[in-house]
Image 1: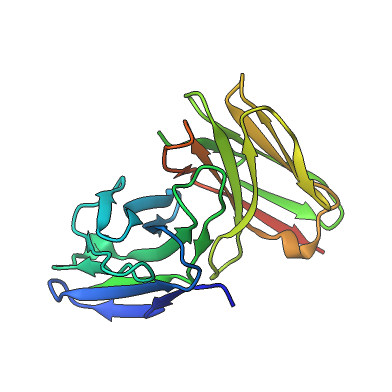
Image 2: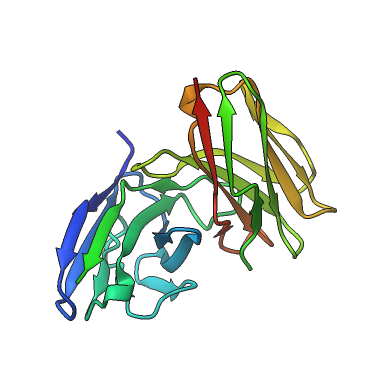
Length: 114
Length: 110
């Protein structure tokens, strides 16, 4: 089954404790991205990757890092989480740069930083 | 620049129709529509490309007016399963990334 898998689904952590949210897709997609979703703001892009070893900042990249060492995986790293990073996070993948293609989203990770 | 969606929220009774609008201040190449049910991931509905072609699937259709830089999503004879938040995403060119609007919450009640 074609899917994007994120882990964990829920995470509560303390300020400053490094964490990683994993994302994996099994569709051989080139393009992957991370979004955060906050009430009233919709989905805002954090980082994206056009292919292996090619990543770039989205609209709200501060406080986040990513890596793309393999085509299927695109982890999101918070080196020193802060309470304002409490949010619902989604990973998405699509065959290539958006254009006329649909995106497939993971199930989301609800992160709480206390 | 984030597109604007209207209305912010709408409540319908089963069988009623609804229109959700998405507008941008800049020229558009495409508009994407997604639906997100509570607690779930956004799911793709359709993409409309520059050219104004209306698309549809069963009772959900959409139009794209590139001159007005806006798109409308039409939900006909709504069903309970239509409840959720609808997002539009816009691209200025085929190489731009998609920027999502804030969403429209739609609730269908019996």
